[in-house]
Length: 353
DNA sequence: AAGCCGGGGCG
DNA sequence: CGCCCAGGCTT
Image 1: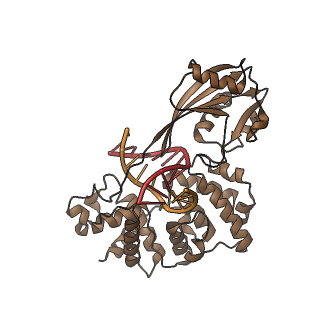
Image 2: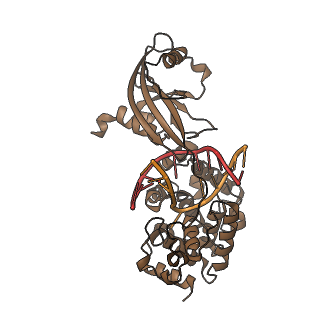
């Protein structure tokens, strides 16, 4: 039996029942595909349901505020996906009569849709013959055919795309694309795949040559940078001072608090730090540490400290991104997870118990 | 070509 | 702790 038929047969027996597999609506598939970028199915599934419920059509999506979109996206990470989706929804309403494109060459023009997502939406929605190449496909092809070209190099991308399109089962591209991705996710897993029950084991290069654990090859390693962000929680009656994060850094357009970033770990008894705090909040300011947290991102290790302030003064006019928000509206704002967790524990502790 | 962008799960 | 996840955008 062919490689393609083995995969499809395996898929028909072992596939999970996932909601986006019951439709060929391009908008719905777009929702699922963008949510699932760099995201596990189990993590993305509740977000897919939430978005479809809040935005049944692309017009509903386009008419929402960006803050609403980011609030629904909160906790999922890579927030530019949400902002790009919002822009694309408005683009589709304005320039495509609200009809979501389902052909590769149109899809690839849209913000937030790259080669993978254009192939996925077009094949699943219109049946167009475009091979998907995601992390699963890289892994399956690399192991089965023994390809050690780094998957994160341009040469690797080219090579794997060429092979994937050559292998594409043209009688049913959508079925084959689903099959190879599901096979990668469930059977040919990154860690400890169960090769003894694999239908392709007899012809698998990696298994034959004991290279399952070294394929696929990926070059370079991510350098993580340490950052030390000190947040100041200013409250006034039932109001709290929040800050909208701007472009050029993490968590763009999400909300946190006014802060001072330092080069290294400091405490409030650090003279230089206290000096900086007084420069911003006045000589009379009283600072007390509330809590500390280490927050991990792909490229950054963020050491976060939360401080409560009393007797502070502040020049608001210099900081247009700052706003007072009442506590009962605070949870409507999109927040990074580390901020959301802090707020839940600090302001809404009683409601949690 | 390399860097940047989150958060979670698993060995 | 390191790696990976239905990647894409910017420089």
